[in-house]
Length: 252
Image (cartoon, rainbow, N blue to C red; front, side, top):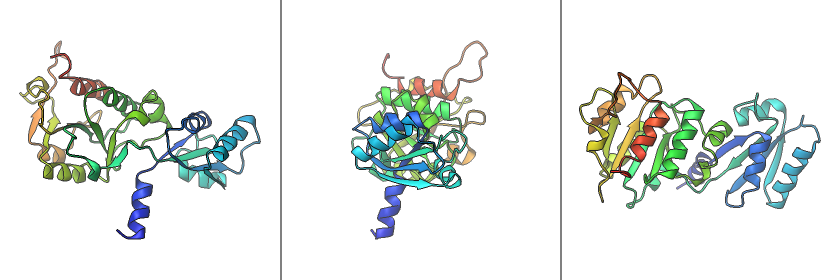
């Protein structure tokens, strides 16, 4: 692997959080590997900023100052970053290539664009028997402070496999003998028909909050499955659906 490829892989495996309170929380957690602190040159010299700088210095974290426009490009949320952003390297945020032989069951996302939904899905997966979440870097909400907040502190307790696209991840998993199950409301197969089985490798795919799984993703599935609905209800919120899939074998 070339130096460029090593550097690219390193930065692909990073998350950037923003906002003064989230950054303080992360800097206070010794279990989170922090790479770099970014501060706006326009920040007032207040007590919170001084505390952030002090904690970063104590941990030996590199601090860089930027003009306001440059910091907004780093945080990708200039309205809410409060002049502070932090690059982190969570141990559970891994390349799809790092799926191991012990990984048997995953949940994958296609087009989940609401940060709150993503955060709640991360929370459910972290608490469940499922081995991890597959999150494409294209087409889904990016992991940021809004997702971190919605995950209720479970973001850094989760195993998340990232991939450039979901298609890329599914091709890799197919080669590793994963059965691909797409959630589709019109399927006659129920998720209860697919209980966890020792040694059985599966990934369950959930689609966009409004439009569901894309056609090309449905075409890559080995089987489609549905969550049985009563009372003429058409669908569940995607985070609720993810919870049912993740815990479907616990109470059977």
